[in-house]
Amino acid sequence: MKAARNSLLLATLALGTSHAFATSITIVAVSDNTLYQSDTGSLSNGSGSAMFAGVNSSFPATIRRCVFRFDIAGSVPSGSTITGALLSLSQNGNNADPQTCNLHRLTSSWGESTSIAGSGQGGGAPAAPNDATWLHRFSPGSFWATPGGDFIAAPSASTIVGGAGTFTWSSTKLIADIQYMLDNPAANYGWILRGNEDTTQSSKRFATHENTDAGTRPTLTIEIANSCPCDLNGDQLVDDSDFVLFVTAYNLLECADPTMPAGCPSDFNHDGIVDDSDFVLFVSAYNDLLCP
Image (cartoon, rainbow, N blue to C red):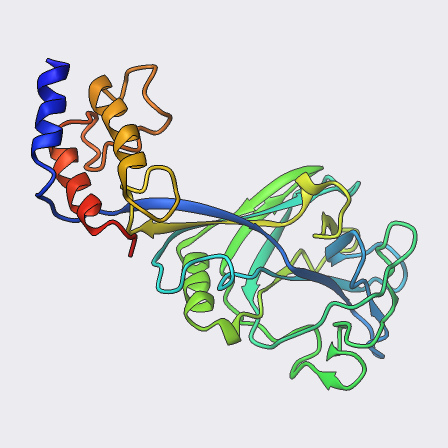
């Protein structure tokens, strides 16, 4: 039976159609900072290992807001369709009280420079040139249109953040944000995270991309519609190397087979088996050779 099926594979390398499924890319933030509420705009934490959202406990109590950005256009193929998104931040502060943290898309550029706050970093440090502050997009000369950051008022996503651990944000609006940033890379200013700004001691502390623990850095997982699902080894070609991988799955047949590669990637039509229908799809891509 297997020999007959393999003969069919080799005899029909001439047919085909097209198909697509989703793949995901995870990237780490390329810049982040904290905006510390201040009448003078003198505080920042551009190169610090922590960023804050909410209100601190000192007198007078003041607001902190996180800003962060990811290199989306440099990580996702141009023209891709975004089908899913998940932002992950690691809360590493002592405040375990659950607080809602809202994510908003920024509408202006901003800077991350060399300032590093001392102690727990909640108090900020003197802003360095080109740091973002409560008043400045780039200290000391470029200002936000509105103190505290220029952003879209409606949240893109919201999550309740509790004690230490990783928290995630996802929504259709977040997907739309990423699609916009991919299609308009010059307008990718990232997001601002606002915590509970009505209650003292509500501030949440998150790891930045400078944190020494790489596993806690801000990450964005982006799911895109894959126009080249038959590229089973990810080399941007559909060739004999992929054919070998496909034949292995074709001989196993059932996606439920415990020896089938994880996710059953050769099941291009997602019907639970790797059969002649999948081969027809594979042949079309094999004849094209190069991924779109």
